[in-house]
Image 1 (tube, helix red, strand yellow):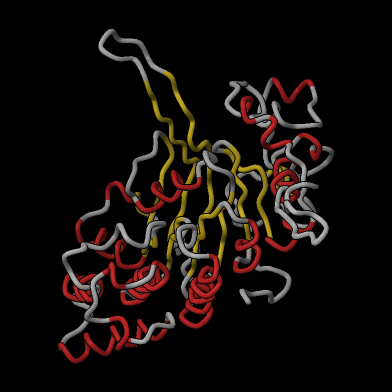
Image 2 (cartoon, rainbow, N blue to C red):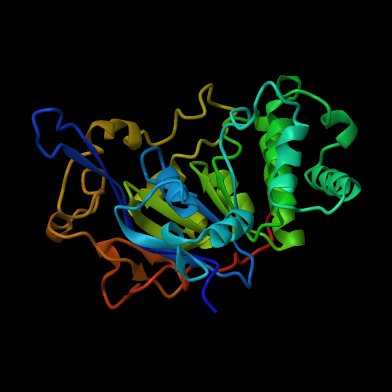
Amino acid sequence: MPPLLSATNLRKVYTSGGGFFGGKGEENVALDDFSFEISGDKPVFISVAGESGSGKTTLAQLLLGFNKPTSGSVKFKGKDIGSLKSEEMREFRTEVQAVFQDPFSVYNPFYKVDHILTVPIQKFNLAKTKAEAEERILTALRAVGLRPEDTLGRYPHQLSGGQRQRITVARTLLMQPKLVIADEPVSMVDASLRASILENMYTLHKEFGISFIYITHDLTTAYQVSDSIVVLYRGIVAEAGPVEKIIKDPQHPYTQELVHSIPLPSLESRNWLDEQDHSMDAVEADVMVKTTGCKYTARCPHVFDKCHTAPPPLYQQENKQAVSCYLYDDGANVVEDDLSDVLETRVDNSVVS
């Protein structure tokens, strides 16, 4: 049985410049040779993390079919999503849902929030009667921690950002999807509400068997909710594997840099970042240096000669972590296909609290 959703050697290149006088223009590789798959049998919660410009949102757009890859393919149940027929595309849009970053832009300010819930029911024939439709809406709202009497009948501006984002999560639940791709779903929500929204998502994952791909720049929330994590750097996979192992024992120098950059509160310091390593800021100007080798050479403290000549493959460690770094090429196995073997369930039961 083919996987629910699979990506094979995904590559996306954006070209800028050229103009009226010809010329090829400058190429920016947003995603390079990315492969993994999501099974429809076992629900998973995978985070895709990295700093701005790492390729996270590009990956989400490709997986949702909003953008076409330069090369490679995205397949839904074994069929390329770019060639799905109308009925197959309908099934894809039902089973693979999205939650976006901005909890306001998805709403039409001239419609009450009920509109975002009733339209999918009508368009996808999710209920046979009006009473059944109303019951489904009430159930979905309660599942994400909203009181229908405090939510329905209001306009978007009358609700908080957290309430609007929960309604979009409720909308995805109405569709009874098998996979939700959530692109920075809490980055524009007050910090006090982020944990509750993520807890809603985690509850849907556990109670309804929905898989999640959680796109984020926040390693703290990725650790709290996900089973596995993929760390991207400038379009390539730097490290992937069980989230518990990667956050507590990062192997790639970039992942180590990300983990060490997480601010820790200190009662002795007026600035939480006073004692943190500021190397990420110091090398900002070197981030986009072009190289035929490893893209991290400008920032890496362990550069070898071969790092400048060819990009390292993904080396699979005994503890299931996969690391794209020549530090680990001594007898390690190379990940030949996709990341499925290294994206395992977490080793503890930590959840949002």
